[in-house]
Length: 351
Image (cartoon, helix red, strand yellow):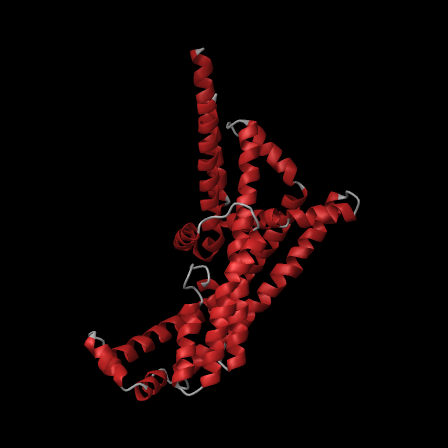
């Protein structure tokens, strides 16, 4: 018996060591695998529809699903990144050359509202300090964006490699999803029923969480970009993307961008443009979350806004831009595990 226990423990150590060595070896390629898994989960219903249309030929259905991902998500996303990069670089060049006067908005507001300087001074805020802060923030932000855009261009070969790997993995994950899950269930020592419930619940929570955050944020950013273009604000696509990212922050979100822009329009005499931006921001952007989230999420489980915010910020800190999705998914897994634990404890207490 002791020899058997020793052999079992030694084998478990070997399994952990080889698994750790394998993950360490492929660590540079885990991000394409992650995005392939996320897209496979999101497009599972699409795969089932294609599977019915092609009469059960799984390889053909997986290929059509992969092409659907390319044309529905990846191509528009690539075009959006290219346009945002172009507008960001253009904005940076205009700021660096002095064509964009960062002091002008403050000067206009100061002339339009003479009491503003006295009001700010009462709180220990000097107009010159505000001018300097705005200039430094704008230059720093534009330099960062320009640097990231140039780095993306220089790393295009790596990006193309990762993109191709993601599509390659996506095809097999979509086609062999059930077989992969069966293999994981067979290996993990958590109990088959518990594991299947865990995977099913995680997929459900992940799907509704992503739909309830990223899709709503994209819609709010698109509406904000259209409003900016209508009122004549430059780099509307760039600002729309910024509003989409900030829309991940509950309550305030995109208002951090369109609010100051509307006030600036009003202060500079663009009355109707400012009113239109305020009305659109309040009635359309602000209420999009209330209308779209119930439609996209339905009655499914969704995370509270404060947990979405916390997990998104934490994900960005740890994983970079991919943390926008990784953070909420980790939080979703956290909720699923504790929810299952609570259910099992409740069932044990009633027996």
